[in-house]
Length: 164
Image (cartoon, rainbow, N blue to C red; front, side):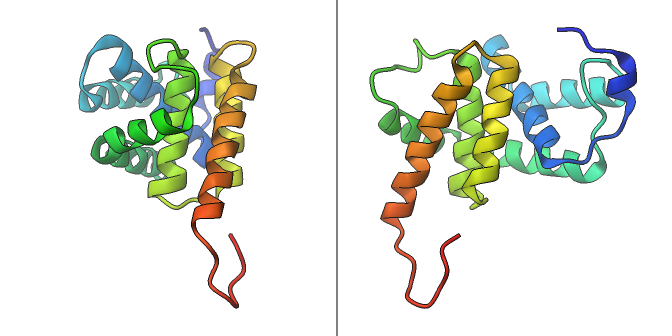
């Protein structure tokens, strides 16, 4: 993947850019058998060093990416268990690793960080389309939308309160 340096130099402060950064760190850690901390350190170093494959994140976006990565470090096994129960007909070994890692982050944010589901799902679908295969966006959307509907059914809204 090549990117033009001019695009990478502009600071980005959006949560989607932070999610993409965290996705890339988790993907590298899972594919190259390095620790999450080492993959994170490498990615931050490349970003700060002006590597043209990493957009420069604002401090706020980098802090949010760090929050995602710390939460994944703490809850990664639970996230995987939830995904295994949600995804039917696929094993982690047969799933595209891009799709799996995108979904890991989205599930983590939706369930453990209690972020509203629609923006998380939209961001995950965009990341899956960008880095995955032709059907990655549809697959990720289907799994996450099903998980979101299931979560809504399991957590009734107390009377007098509006749903999220």
